[in-house]
Length: 119
Image 1 (cartoon, rainbow, N blue to C red):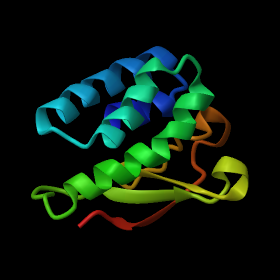
Image 2: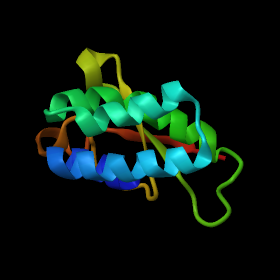
Image 3: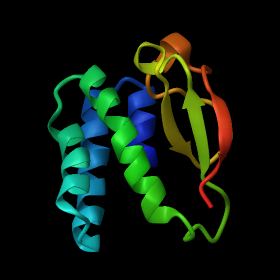
Image 4: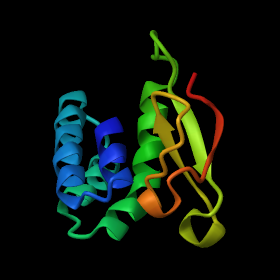
């Protein structure tokens, strides 16, 4: 997930596809629900960065639900950008508090606020 998010921060379609493909392998090994698997698979097949970014919130919620109560070392932060998706907002997860916005990349890299952690 973190590699996929980072690729979106960097605006790199191919790296986002590659990172999401690794996530699909992990999902397959876990035997996740088909709808969850499809959300991340759609990032793999998306040909443009905007579509990939639109798919990230669903994947974020799936990953947050999967890791809830399982983070043993360190913290996973929930970060929110209120301006994403025409001001309806969007969340992402990060292994540190640094704001690197996957929805806007370089154009608004530091737009966001840490809302808490996945516990």
